[in-house]
Length: 192
Image (cartoon, rainbow, N blue to C red):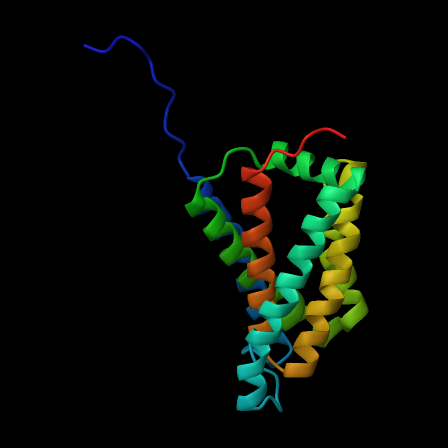
């Protein structure tokens, strides 16, 4: 007989919470699109098959450039190393499965909401501003993340406007999140 008490299993797993949160964001996006008379948010009127083919390729190229710059910053600037360490502490231990689910759910949910639903309604700058406001961390050390979220909101919005679909923004958002979260959780950068 095991007399040691084990802590109870959580009612909802981390993955379930992540999917639930971003799933709710996607549902809200479809609701906003439906109210605007555009429930299908993935593709804008006027998008062509060639643009839809090029969109994810451009999204991947943009993402790899952003990841390169973020790695470069983490190795060159104190503020970036501090942000890395802050995120590492905030995220804690994540499994490869958790990272994949987080990157996939956030890229789809956020792109449907911010680019698919809000951008046609509020415009490029305002939708990027709302995106940035929802990327405010628990302290001033997260301010560069908020500023970069605004820049990424503009960049993803321009991609959406040029190509007419969410393929590029979703691929870019997923790749950036997947590679950067993996790096943050696996690499412990030294103090300056």
